[in-house]
Every structure is written in structure tokens, then in C-alpha cells.
Figure 1 (tube, protein in one colour):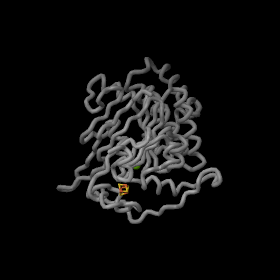
Figure 2 (cartoon, protein in one colour; figure 1 turned 135 degrees about the vertical axis):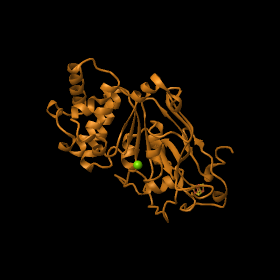
Figure 3 (spheres, rainbow, N blue to C red; figure 1 turned 45 degrees about the horizontal axis):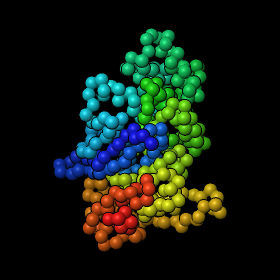
Length: 323
Ligand code: SF4
Ligand code: MG
């Protein structure tokens, strides 16, 4: 498959106070293939939203590279930057906070059309907006209304229509369904899946809920304290989790039919996630890992492909990779 995005050794540090540094994203490497959905999961504060924001250049990277369609995103200027700003779009967790309350839905959806000069006149603009609203399941009667007149699920549809307006290839969805009622979540996810098929979109789908991520993602990456700890095809990850943190997360996911899948014993992790200002030496998960060994405090486990297309950073598997 063709790579659309290559993230190499990405770091994003925030300086706080006098000498303190939050290592929000610390040496993360992964690729995204054209047309796939890559899910990114982890507890809040693990850096997954920061990755999304750094990829789309809402944040400048501290170091490392982000290559989108063979170009370094953080070096883009002028027309190339403008093109990138169209090709990569983001949808947010809280559609209400990300929609301007004083703009009509029509103007919100048309914003990108205006910025990028994609329509010639008002008639074409209105036609295009109506078409976009229809695409996400909203009708003509909604075009002159304001965001507060809509439900959470409808607002997320408006956010999706706004993102689609500029014909992107790549959409970063940062917890797009986390704020919605469970009954509405599946509708939004199904809409996203349909749009992906119809428009050939690539998604980075950020979430903390593993069950929904499994449903939508082709591959899943698991993050812990600013780092990617495991990445694999979703089925492979769910059937053969390697990293102890992934095992713990999966053990909390309810099993739909206990006879079909092997029963997982619930793993309760001890303690809390340490501070990203002063992360543990060696493996960052070691303070909570049920399988920690001496070496885990001494050496940072390398990010290695230990099974085909299955990456993990854990000392338990370093030899299997022939190291
Ligand atoms: Fe646990 Fe060690 Fe693996 Fe970290 S490297 S997850 S502490 S076994
Ligand atoms: Mg977040």
C-alpha cells in the first residue's frame, strides 16, 4: 500500500514555568497508508491529541519529521502550505466549541470554500453548501440556522461537512464521538465510513475507547505517556496484543460473545500515569507494568517490528526481533 503520511521520530515538547518541559510527544514513528483508518488510542494526556495537532501544523514540531505526500509538512510555504491546509483537515471532539456560534451553518460550511477560492459566486457557493449538507444527512432547511439550534450529533455532522468542503484527502478526527450519546456515536462513525469509501479519504482516528476504534480502524496504535508502545492491524492487535499496556487496555473491553473470543482476565493496573515532565527512566510504563524486569528501568525499549507489520516497544520482545 502507498504511504500518504510518514511520521519519523516526532517530538513535541512544551516549556512550562522556568525550566520545566512537558514531553507531550516523545520520539514517535509511524506511517499512514492511503485510504486506511489508523486508530490512535490511549488515556487522556498520553499525547494523542498533540500528535494530531502537530501533524496538521496547529503546533510546530520540536524535532522529527512529518512527511505528507512526500513533502515535509513543517517546511511548507506559500502555495504548497495553502494546498496542504486544504488537503489535511481536522474534526474535533467538541463540535460546539469548534463551530462559531455567531455564524450560520451555511457560512460555517462555506468558510473553506471562501478561503481557498473554490467557488465563483454566491449561487455556486449555496449549491455547494447544500450538496455538502446533504452528504452528511442535513437538509436545506438547516442552512440559515445557528449551531446552538442543533443536537450534538448534528453539530458533528456540520463539522464533517465543513472539513469536506475543501476536498481533503486526509482527516484527523480527534475524539469525534467521545462527547456524543452512545446511540448517536454509531451513526457518526457509519457516516465517516461511508464518506471514506465514497471519497477515498484517509483517517487518523483518535480515541480513548478501544471498542469503537476497533470497529472503525484498519490498524491501531496504542500510546502511553507521549510514546507509541504498539501498532498493528486491528485484528492482530486484538487477538495478539504484545505490550503489557495494550493487554491491560484490552482486558477492560467487554467481550460481545464470550464463547467466540477467548476470555480475557481483567488486568487492573496499579498506580497512576506518571507526569510527562519527569517520566520514568527506561520504559515509561515500568512503574505500572505487571511484567517489569530490571532492564526496563535501565534501557529504553526500541520500537521494533517483531511480527510482520506488528510494532512494539517492550523488552519482552527485543530478542524476537533478532537483536
Ligand atoms: Fe513492561 Fe518492561 Fe515491557 Fe516496559 S519494557 S512494558 S516495563 S516488560
Ligand atoms: Mg485529547
